[in-house]
Length: 257
Image (cartoon, rainbow, N blue to C red; front, top):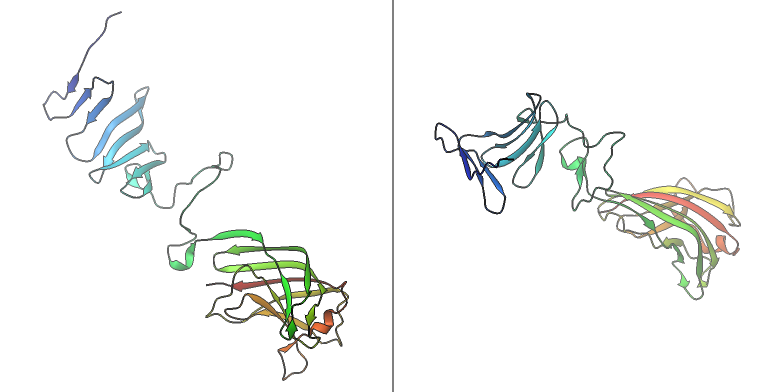
């Protein structure tokens, strides 16, 4: 078997384009002219893809009428047929998906404006605690059967199933709140309402409805009752929960800063 030993291959017109083989085995392919193809890949004589340069120093990898990539200073762009491709190339496929996506920033969904920017998603648990605005905590205790939240962007939805097992030293006439929300509400926002179910053993003195709200800047839920057309936000009293076997379920969505 014969051996061909080469150090450099130059273009016959001496344009300067050349292929050089270094002593360590690395190969340098030097395109001396304008942007374009550096390596042309073929199968049975037909082009199947190229590696080239664009905008002076952007590496491009492109298939013949297939998806490719353009590597710019601080971004990687979809590339096809020698041009940037906008909105026509997918990442993955229904039966060949990527696994996890790790980002230090957010994503733009459905547009490029600030309203389309999603910068946070979080799931977790929280610790709801009953309070009243009169008296003191004493031996007050809250039993939590389950409490979780989901945060998508600047919106938080919190759920819980709880019992006020002991009212401690709170006054029976104290207005009731539920503290421990995972995030404080947006300070410049409005009042947010949710759904509340008295599952059992809550002594509603009449049939008037309960409501739960989060006011702007607060990290707690306020319990209120509509006692007339004129008084909408009368606080629900601690005495309504004096049966220690009470059960409550609630869900509320509110905005954070």
